[in-house]
Amino acid sequence: MSNIEQIIEERAADIGNFLVGRLLPFRQKRAVGPFVFLDHMGPTHLSNYQNLDVGPHPHIGLSTLTYLFEGSIMHRDSLGSEIEIKPGAVNWMTAGKGIVHSERTPEYLRSSEKMLHGFQIWVALPKELEKMEPSFVHIEENEIPHWTENGLSFKLIAGEAFGRKSGVPAYSPLYFIEIKNTKAQKVNIGKDLFGESALYILEGSIKSEDTVFEPKQILVAKESTLCEFEMGENTSVYIFGGEAFPEERFIYWNFVATDKAMIEEAKERWIQQAFPKIAGETGFVPLPAPPKF
Image (cartoon, rainbow, N blue to C red; front, side, top):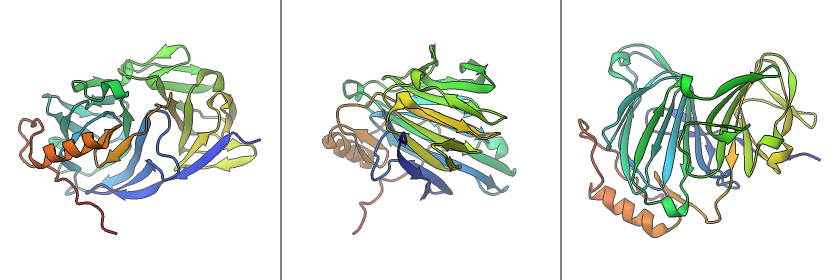
């Protein structure tokens, strides 16, 4: 019997400068554990006159995780953080009661041809921490737990698994794992997983119950502890999940909350420009108009 509950294909979504592959939320699957949003950016080639320029915009009720495979993004936020995100590093920004940040191509790359490829992820906060003070953590690639075992290369980008713990300060039980290989082989890691679990294929292929799956798909498991599959050669997969929250999460634009009133209050604060400001930034992304039907 198959352990795959659902297959989610990437859908194109416009984030202003270019299209991304939207994976979560999905109509029939709003979250996997505490993970409520997952965009696959690129790989996108930007010419010498094209740049990523996502101006100041707000968040509440979540932590964002940015993880790049190629390219570079300059992160600035209302806490005063200003740091360049490079491939393999982790940016973990916790919005709590409210934070504002911008994401732009670094100045030294703005007149050059470049690539941009990575993940943008939102992790919901537990209800009791939704209004916590905002914070920001940057973890360099060499600080992320990584190891090889039985011909597989592992990285524990966030959370806890395999008896290891990432330095990313997650606020609920979760995991975000990278697995790479060069030769085709079977993988059985179910005993190390918990809660809800899903697998994203970045490169290569996997086989499960005699069916082959290829990139740009999420496979959602019926039971995380039964996670077993065969990786084709030169394959990269990302397994993520954890304990689901008992409460529903509402999402409007960049706001995540257990109470719609919190979202309405955040919308009004942004309209009134009452969120904290980013030093050196003057523009901002306006609140989107409600969809028309």
